[in-house]
Length: 224
Image (cartoon, rainbow, N blue to C red; front, top):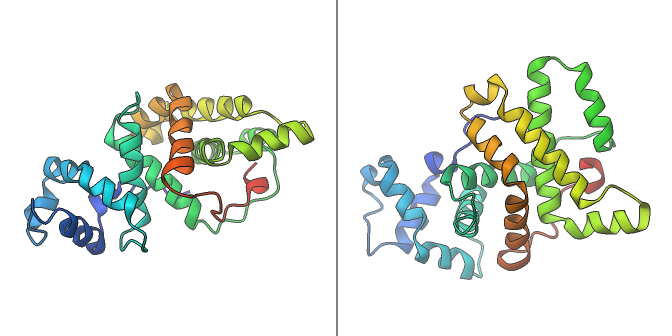
C-alpha cells in the first residue's frame, strides 16, 4: 500500500487549477502561480460554495482529478461534523480514489482471516495491512451499507456495527504506530477512529445525495 502524496490539495493537476480558475474567475487569476503556492489562499478557494455548486450541478464529465472531485464534495459534507479538518477530507478523497483505481487482486479472505494474518507479518507490514483494512471497512460501510445488511439478513454475516468496530480499532492501532507519525497521518487516523460513525455517515450522504457511487468497480466480497 502506498501512502505517499496523500494530499490532493498540494498536488492539484493543471486541469484542476484551470477548472477552479474558470469557476472562480471573478476572484482570481488562475495564471498567478502564487495563488496555488499560498496554502491558506488555495484552501479558501477550494472551500468556496460556488466551486462546490459547480461540481455538484455539472452534468458533463468534469475535467478534474478524482481526488479534487471527491475532496470538494467530502469537504462540504464534513464541515458540519466533528471531522471538520481539511486534512481528513483530503485523506478520505485520496482513499476513495485509490479504491476506484485499484487493480489489486485480493484473496477471498474474510475480515477474521485478515486479522489472523496480522500475526505473521512484521511491524511495518502490520501497519500497512491495518490501514488498508481500516480504509476498506470505512468505504464498505459508507458506500455499501445495504449490501452489508443484505448479507447479514440472508447469510448471517457480520453486521454493520461489526465492521465499524473493525475499522475503528484498525485506525486506532495505525494511528499509534511510528510509521503514522513518519507519514504525518497519526492525528488523521486517531480522528477517524474516534469519529468513525461520522465518517461513515458522510460517505453515506456522499453516495446517496451527491453522487452515484453504487456502481464503482470494487469486488465487495473480496474486500470482505
